[in-house]
Length: 395
Image 1 (cartoon, rainbow, N blue to C red):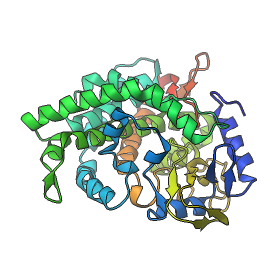
Image 2 (image 1 turned 90 degrees about the vertical axis):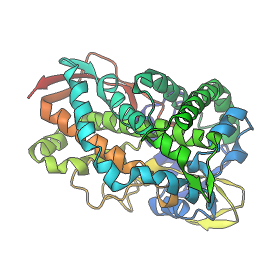
Image 3 (image 1 turned 30 degrees about the vertical axis):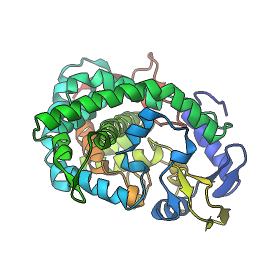
Image 4 (image 1 turned 135 degrees about the vertical axis):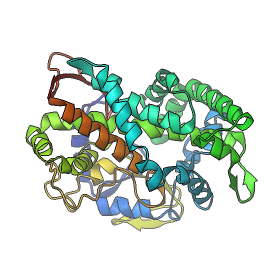
């Protein structure tokens, strides 16, 4: 496998080669435990006491990253995680998410009205749609979305060498993203302070007014909240929309079934999420000596649950390499598991369902333009396309 910009197929091949060493095994080069099996990954993600999400020990101290992490509950353990997640989860209740459907449909229609018979799906729809939705929720100007995209591209654009120790890779990545972290923090602090001075009905204003254990959150604590929600709140949907069209291109019989029976679209999206998992892995640190899948993990060791591999575990998914819109059940781990299950999963699913329903309804043919280049992210970092030229024909 190449060490820079491998293809998705090369990445999958590396994972399956790794699985031959065991569903759970130690990697001497990276100095970590790889967890590839579905039940084993589920066990790690279910046990927040034995496997900590606080990864600060893996990276050098850096002021801007430290500031961003203060409100980033993804990298927190209980009880702090519970307090902050409970606070922000009020903005993602089933009722709140369901009420966004008309706005998502309106934006999708407006964005597709602006394209002709050839367009880049990412530029035209997959990026602007979710970033406008999350920016409106946060009260952030959606007109700044080109800036947000630049940030996301830098944060997710770091090439990873599979033969490099995790600590060394983390230090290199931190050096590369530090200027962007500084710019993001300054932007979010300005936004938070403006909302504290002149609050509205948006989520940022609610966070400014909120109390945790009787105390208001400091501006610096809200930075991580806002940054996480803005970046993570759009990038998964962007990836899923692009991955869906790529998957439909590869499996025309499946998309034909979905066109004949639109009720299959949610299941098709779940299969896309399983087979092209946007974030391929998570990371944990063992807090005590423990055992998972026959692996004896020592306290302080790094554990990597590979979601991509778990989602292709033949013990759980029959014919795991087959794209099956009728797969039931489909217990993929794409949005994680346990207390850190992705807060925005219902919104990402809704955005994908509405956008793909309108896209397939508007065009009888949606094909990747064969003469133009499709561009992909490094699948070690994220499984997604960054450029997807389409040729379409109106229904």
